[in-house]
Image (cartoon, protein in one colour):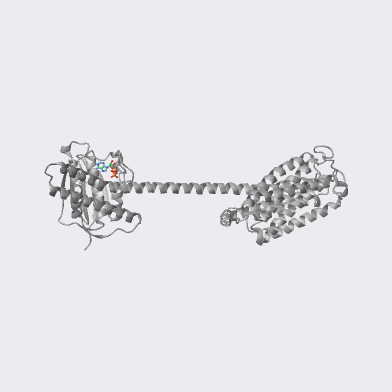
Length: 527
Ligand code: ADP
């Protein structure tokens, strides 16, 4: 389980993400700029520049901050991937972050003329050498161990403890080196001859560091795979340029080349940090976006569940309402001293029919949701209209609506799903009755007409109500459009989808003399 989680997370790690073409181009561009800068400074590398003693500790302060943040971010990546290579690299950055502290404090002429901690003239330069050797070794360590077989898991020890051990080792190393370069300064070969000149010996430690870095660079070039590898190649190249300016090219301190070296050291220290920050921000944006999409999806799911619940309620309410009306009528009939048994039997049959219709409706909704194509069977539209009127006759009587039908030509053969079309008709008729509930009973007149219109069979359902509010006329077939206190605005939308699924059309108009008329047109069955 843990391994699976790691695999999922490692897909977002810098050590695993392959560089995009844009990133590769950006890396090459940075390398070219550094190369041009390097070539531009080389001819003037020995040109003396004013000695700015405060410049170096300020630079160290920047390196301390950037390398410390880089180390923390790399340790964070290590805590997810548990790869030894990242642990080595992070510790390398931690080492450079810490070693610049004694480097700044012991720098001659910065805090005291000779430097703190009883530093000698060689202390700062040797700290500089150790700083660079340490980083080059970490870089090589990263390059060598990055694809090693056991790189996946450093060990089963808790991440915090492992990082703690590394940090403690780094601190001990820095203290040891500081002690060696201050108390043991006399034992070390001289690197600076006087305040400004470098000793010829300097080239050995510098070449040594360059060789380690070059080895790391070569391994990285061969095994490069991730975004981090790509940018570490740039870091290694700039680091070599920095080393060249720190003892090979300029022979004097405080020269143009000497300062250029320090500027390069700023670049090496900030590249990985910038990339880590940029990638983390990009990742954050990416995650925020996908979170947004997920939330929207969830919202949509909820909305469609709501729509489905509304649909079921809407469709089942109708037969349930009829059953209730019939039961009430039956109860009042049973209370009479001489109940009319044949009428009660008829009402019971109605209840039975409504119950069958309700379960039929539910079955159809299920079919609709399953996206199973509806049944296509020959239907006679006039017969279908008659049935719908019969279904609602009890309700019409109860609501004092006078229903008149003008069933057109003897036969209107169409094909489709009988129950679905009847459901659409029932919806329109109930809506018409609802529309007339506020007008005097004497004017509640509902006309249902069928006719032949070219290749189509038409049903028109007209009422004497107030008509559809003009602002609703456009969107009346949209789901959730309702003007009723307890309406759901689903009936017309369902009716439209049913009719359109049968290749028909449905339209709504207001009549010039008042009231609304809904027209359904369905294609006549061929043959
Ligand atoms: P509901 O009946 O739940 O409101 P419908 O989709 O069946 O949902 O109807 C949507 C709206 O269309 C109704 O609220 C009403 O404003 C309007 N409407 C439908 N039929 C008529 C009609 N015959 N006369 C006037 N307005 C109507």
